[in-house]
Image 1 (cartoon, one colour):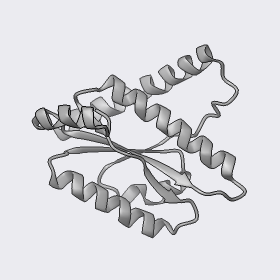
Image 2: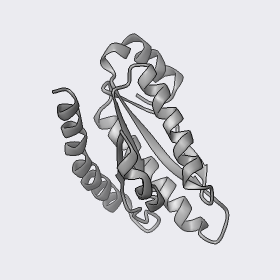
Image 3: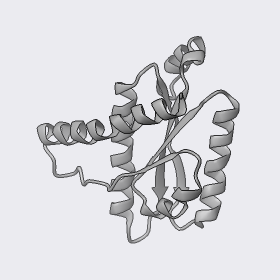
Image 4: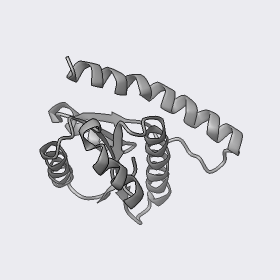
Length: 155
């Protein structure tokens, strides 16, 4: 389910069955790295949208967690932990955090939730067929991670 009024109505009716959320981490900055920053955001947005489609009814795709690229990692971490605390306080058991920003790997070891780092693939030169194939391959690699997390935490 997406962060839309239509899907939130569905979520409210079935909240007891929705135990997972995806948080896409999206950097923002207009500096010299703007193209790579945009590529990271676009790539993670497309991956998380496809994951939501695959697991519709099982998880909630949250709005993008957008942060300033040059912001201190400690500040970003604290804001993200606030989101995770809010989710857990409201019954979300499994939180999947997706990013293409390698800076987040610095704090991966202290995170209680699953941080998934994916290198951003440039999408600008792909035709529709290549894009669809690439997205399918990426998501097919992620699906077992989600399923294993659910199994491990439900034991």
